Image (tube, rainbow, N blue to C red; front, side):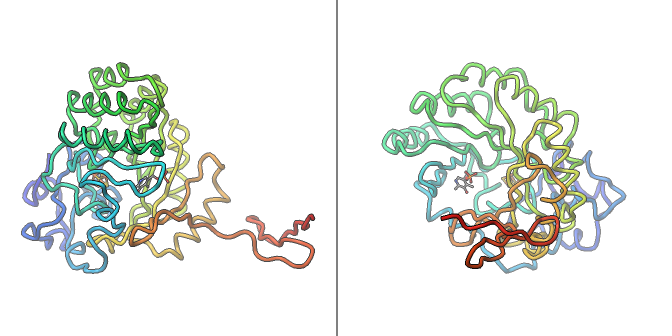
Length: 344
Ligand SMILES: *Cc1c(COP(=O)(O)O)cnc(C)c1O
Ligand code: SF4
């Protein structure tokens, strides 16, 4: 485990910008697991995995953005429970992760030594869920859900399943990459014991094809054997995956390993992440090209989580280019225009 600049210096020749990162400015802590470090090509200062986990000066010279760009705090029922959309909610079960991503959009919360959700907090959330029957899905997120001990995980899932067995639970984690050893027989037994009622969905975050390892693919298979299918949410990141080639390779590798690409997020306006954000114009051009090259199953939805709690909006080329009296006029993704008659 690497927790400080001096830990990093032992294994990496730090660049000027990485050296200039100051440990004194309180922000997102450094934490890189051995598994993540093993994936970093130490001879490449621009390695796409290094860029996601090794901090640099750029994150401290960025004053654009906020620590809570989605105004999650305003939409929170408690520090840990965000109920922004009518039929679904997010429960931040812990602020801890096995490795901290420099692009983390929840910096206001992540890595602040807040700890795991308490039994008392869970009881309050369960009371809320009893009243709010419109909630159909809960995202178990954080931080990383699987930082919880087996015991705590069982408490969280047991209490939610007992209160509302009809709620779909999304298991949001980056541990397939950052801590694959966490997925023990004992952990899977928790889900075996609580595999009634509405289904679970596994929500992964793989941003670069090299992150999908033999170990992570095996973990996906084990969830599948319990009937739990996997979706991937990635972030569009400059110098990591901001090329059509990398996105195409990522999407194919995900789908072939039984993970459905779900969202490709535009970077949020989080303080300290501007060096990783991609211009929306470039993102839209990439999306258009990706849609031509990828199958419908491979294609993620390019999505922006709007500032000030505006919610998620899909970014895509508008193929409906116009209309005249008799027809709708479309851009064909493969070039040229097509007309579709107006039928009354
Ligand atoms: C993204 C998000 C969800 C889930 O949205 P989907 O579009 O259904 O994936 C739920 N709650 C919050 C607060 C979110 O940010
Ligand atoms: S795993 Fe998720 S919550 Fe944890 S640091 Fe990365 S983006 Fe943030």
